[in-house]
Image (tube, rainbow, N blue to C red):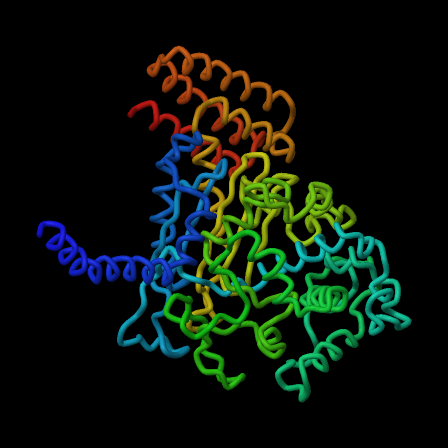
Length: 504
């Protein structure tokens, strides 16, 4: 009887057990991408564990919120990482707030989230450049090959000598943009691209640096001709999927719209409020897929992409680029154009948005929609700032000051960690000729070496005393034109952060 009773109880419980397993399976089936994303993404950590101060990162909150209150942008997401660890990942303001360019408020504005997806605008060029260098890795071409060897459209008298490298470095002579809006041209995507490649040059190849979307639209065509795949398909198969970037794509599906930051109202294209489709009119006219724009992504996904580059082409043993290809990308090919340092795809050493993170090998890019990324190999650090500054109109205040402030405070968290890190800053500034002569450099270094000694022996009073002396010294140098006011402000900021650390 007991056996029979047990069998009956088991039969009663089987449906419940099946229900539990069914529920678990359903949950897993609904969230495979979320689970996969968490596995691949950089993990959070305390700033102190990667030798960064917390206070400068907290101060960035105030700067972002001030920019939002001044209507520089409706919202933002910031991600800062060092040594592969995320030390700051925060969201501010709104992802979607207005219904038109007159700043008419939505009934239910959508708050920015840390996983909000942004239209990357020209940061898309980095994906194009990486795809090009993957094909270089496969020996599909040499950088100095003529584009006309692969694209018959370049078999013209003025364009036949343009090289692939010149397209990558914006020295091809191409105009910044097509002479006519592509959405006004009747025809297919292919016919519109033919129009782009037929545009006359602005300069002789190699004569000037001119930032040009046409360069990267052409590189997108090159990818498609060599591989036989449309660029979005190639990038997805060879960059996005191998890196587990589940929030990165061209042409997001409509179900993702609530997670996407809204852009501007575009009555001239007939699209109304652009939200969930590519903002750039040229890329939109090319079915949302082009070499210069079209990528959508989140801060966490971009961190994977940048970490792959900081690791010279590999991430978690997945090789996207060879080290040789990465090193070629990170050379300044534009030494003939002072101030326009450029690798194969990205800016190098641009202090107008990199601030003191800018060094010879610091790479990054900005996007018209208000996005920017900066990565410093020397400091193994990245600073990602994503904003929707064109929402609800592009006629807004420049985001460049907040881009620069983000880089400055990221660098401050590192350089103000201790006197030894401040010595690294002095060396970096010296390489940029920031000091009148070597006497100034030597004096500052000796002062910091003494402070380092007191730090190592834990003598807080002497650390603070000598840091105050350091402040007096840099004030003297500024008053005597040995350092600029900007350099003085930078060094004073670092010193005061370190004083505060030794007060705590």
